[in-house]
Amino acid sequence: MKFPLLKSLGIVGLVAFGISGAQAGDALTVVSWGGAYTKSQIEAYHKPYTAKYGTKIQSEDYNGGLAEIRAQVEAGKITWDVVDLEVSDAARGCDDGLFEKISAGSLPNGINGALPAKDFIPGALQECAVGTIVWSTIYAYDADKYSGSKPSTISDFFNLKKFPGKRGMRKVPKVNLEWALMADGVDGKDVYKVLATKAGQDRAFKKLDSIKDQVLWWEAGAQPPQMLADGEVVMTSAYNGRIFNAAVTEKKNFNIVWDRQLFSFDLYAIVKGTPRLKEALRYVQFSTASEQLANQARWISYGPTRKSSIKLISTHATAGIKMMPHMPTAPNNFKTAVLENAEFWSDNGDELNERFNSWLAK
Image 1 (cartoon, rainbow, N blue to C red):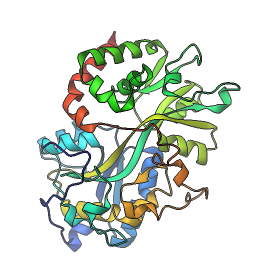
Image 2 (image 1 turned 45 degrees about the horizontal axis):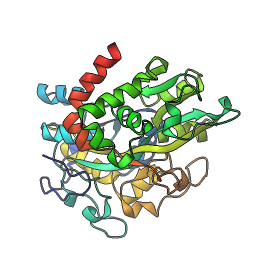
Image 3 (image 1 turned 60 degrees about the vertical axis):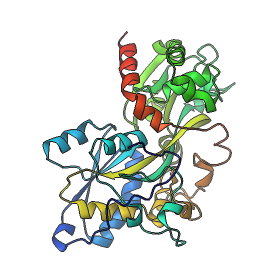
Image 4 (image 1 turned 30 degrees about the vertical axis):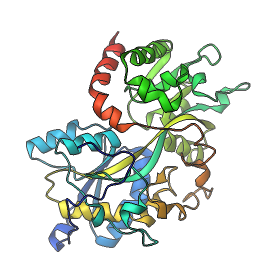
């Protein structure tokens, strides 16, 4: 399957199911990324679902990837039911038979009556997964550490002379290679065309070489704000919602640099072979309804994937501030945004991961 990143699908592979009383009593395991993001799902999805249907939701955390899912499916011992995934993993896992197919027609219409295939933003529906949020990788810094000039561009992230100090970066090639090329002068619209070439890859790694000895690598999404708070780094890549949460709920003076943000979706998929398939589908249907997606946006600054949810976004659930200005897609934040090309990473990820890991080991 070549998943269409820029158009929604109406797949007809799975019908909606009713739930038996016995099955509804079983706990459902939903796996996500932990921290403030999982908290937003607990508040917006898990608790209301349990209140409505009586099913207990068991929440577990992971750091992404398909290894554990593949191991469960191949062993025929499924303990995870629903998993929150990045786009490339959702597509690859579907290709590899790790996830159940989900029909767009089995999802609820928008609150305005719009059919799912029209209501979800382009790219948010895949053959085996349903988008829940629009998120971005940005970089952030602790404003308390800067009394004069402050970082404002992706080039500043790579400028150790102007802004000395340790950087935090996720321990994967994705985003790092794109940012390296854009910091080296490649336009956002051309970055994947350049990165698809050997010369472009060499150029990206050469740019990363320029800061390599000043980088601290992170793996879990909760790490970057903690690294900033502890003074381990002066700036770090991060998921925008994690920095928002630290600034709003923990009162940290962290600033987000939106220049060249790489935005994407997270999606829910159902693990192939789960004995709780009907319950898992009902949970996905419930969680991706207009109201629930808008409710999640009250807890963390990730945008909903349904158009009908946008007008429902209001204020933060506890802080009371307006949420729209903090979304990746807010006009002031979106000027130089680049859509993460998940198809590129699905096709080239193995090769670039291997090269990245070899580069790290040098």
